[in-house]
Image (cartoon, rainbow, N blue to C red; front, side, top):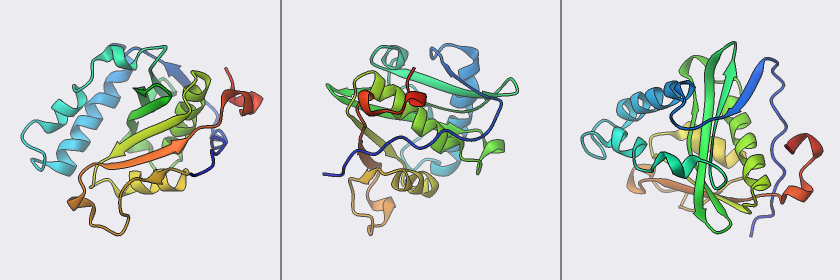
Length: 184
């Protein structure tokens, strides 16, 4: 078993605001629109016609509402620049979904920041583990999760196209062990 790790240090960028929003909030729309475009452009019809829309509509919005779920949006200068969500996957396991960084704001550490925010919130909500998947044509996501301490639940030497969704898990630090700045 991999020991739990502390969340990554918050991103040292001023002007970022993290909001916990319902799926229906208009500030969430850029996340969903760009994810649909990203999925369509990377995967085309690999998973069938309309697969991107189907994936984004697979779970009811209520599953991403508290207390069992959350949807976080990172805003900068009034614009949604990154985000992510989680839903209950099991009694003590959160499933992270929709981790996204706006294409104009990539390579700034925002995805790692979102991961840390999601991990801290999930731990405060009593989750002890995280489960997530990413697609086989998203190597940057695969590397992000590996570098953030997630354990691959697949053969890393295998061709990702032969695996399908790439699953990862991670043990969370209990809320009582989080640094004060990570609570709230």
